[in-house]
Amino acid sequence: MLIRIVRMTFRPEERQNFLDLFDENKSKIRHFPGCSHLELLEDFNDPNSFSTYSYWNEESDLNAYRHSELFAAVWANTKSKFAAKPIAFSLKNYIKVD
Image (cartoon, rainbow, N blue to C red; front, top):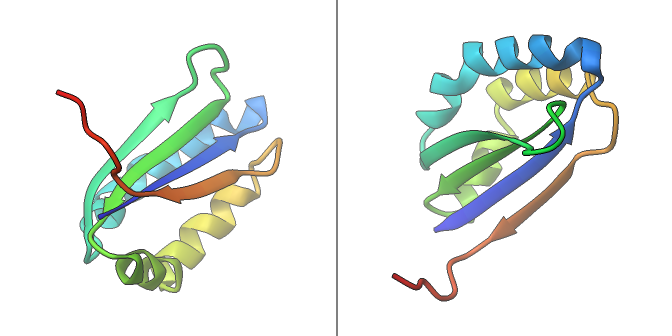
């Protein structure tokens, strides 16, 4: 499993536009082949910063999404709203403590 986190900071006037865009597309993203989990997290101290937190079965599933028409449309619209460059990274489980 691959865990993908993307942190995005938006211009204040674009915050609601981003939230509307996410709401319109969240189900399509979550049900894209290979995606088993999707969350949108709001920064505790900055209401204009959000992170997506998603699980992908394989790196190839994430790459297929990143090369899809869905991603192209959503990302083009999303990045036009940024106040800062996004930060994205992929992780894998290493140690889980119960």
